[in-house]
Length: 296
View 1 (spheres, helix red, strand yellow):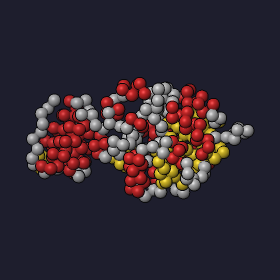
View 2 (cartoon, helix red, strand yellow; view 1 turned 180 degrees about the vertical axis):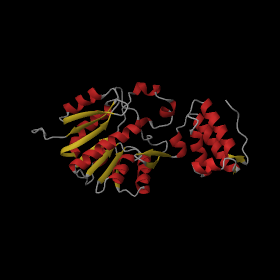
View 3 (cartoon, rainbow, N blue to C red; view 1 turned 135 degrees about the horizontal axis):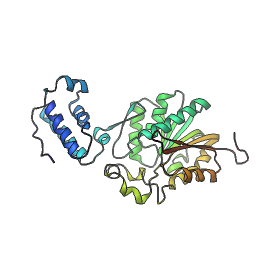
């Protein structure tokens, strides 16, 4: 791999070429060098394009160099930049939260359809992480009463910061799944969403190093069969859903049948799975009904 770059009053063009080369040698996307250069210098893409020979201060060049090496070592780009895009909005992320994925955007879009069709107002995001789900819903739909819950205090700090940044009112609760709501005056919800941990414990080591080595294990590990959180959420969500309320879950590509059976066992109706844009089973929607009545 290329040696360490000698920082000084370097030109933008030289730094960009050096960073791109190093990333590509490390089997990373060389285009990320531009994003890291923009972050280090505070310049836009256009400013770099129109003035590629502009000199860069030593401190900026050194910051850029450090971040290039962090990326070649496998640290996720979003954690280095401290931001991730979700639903067209920018969210702060760090090592304490799962980096938002495009597949989760599809879950939010589906939930938003249901919210608008049925006039749902009271919404809970369980395992909220960065808070990107409730904050996005609040930005896209007025009048919602939003809640988020997570076991991690560190994650909730990130989520609270994101809600403040986007000026969306979200009530956050700390605790182990629905235990987070015990002792509160929270009323039943019209809709509950969750992107819970769903990776089988033994397969975690097979994930990409930049995932398993840098994102929180507690946001990934779904127990021996990957279904531990679905069982608990399905069992307890009905106690917090209004009759006829909806439960939305993100699932692994091979978990559709197993999650469906869990939901059926717990008495949910209108259980509907949906594939993501890649054609994989990725989410499921189910309605809570009174034990004596199946809603149609």
